[in-house]
Image (tube, rainbow, N blue to C red; front, side):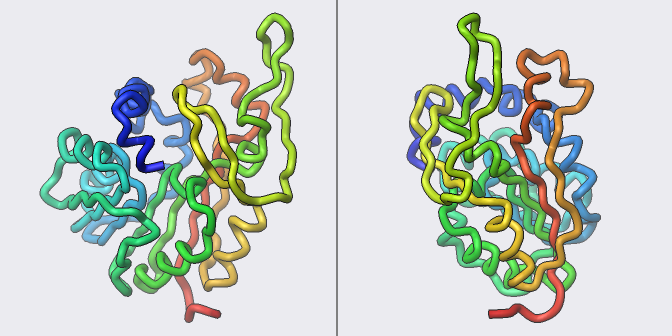
Length: 247
């Protein structure tokens, strides 16, 4: 996935997306994600797969003391440093699976639309758990299992090009999925709802909120947005570190 984002043509296509040009206000899930943010005043924050750094900048504006944003794409990090700089933010070209998570350091770990590129979630969950302070929050947004189990992750259309329905198949078969995104074949990984949530509980997280993000009413005039009410695309989860980590 990192190679694709560092591909010039793909990156230019990504740069034209509304969320790339306008930031959080153009992200359909933001109005659901923002209320799940904990109070970060004076806190330490880690952003896994920070992209352009929009969430890092938001944390800085909300008073966080230190923010680390990591992303495996050099182009993403270069753009983040240009568009969302702040003396409290450190941007690193670093893969979230190989990042050396410091123990008991962060008060918030956030990850937005990245974990569906990871084949095995539980090892990441364990690293995040160890890196959080007691009472720290893990807040993430992952593509919904109904979306990742969609055939080619696209609608079925009638002869006139109108949306008929969203096809779901092989739901209980986790693993690699290939889909066309911004004109390129992209590899993602499908995880069932059970596989996304249960490891959090097993590790020692307390799940505080689960949101199947819907577009806001203000975005309903955007072409195609009304169809987004016909199936979930994103799953937002807020969990807090509690107790001792289990095996």
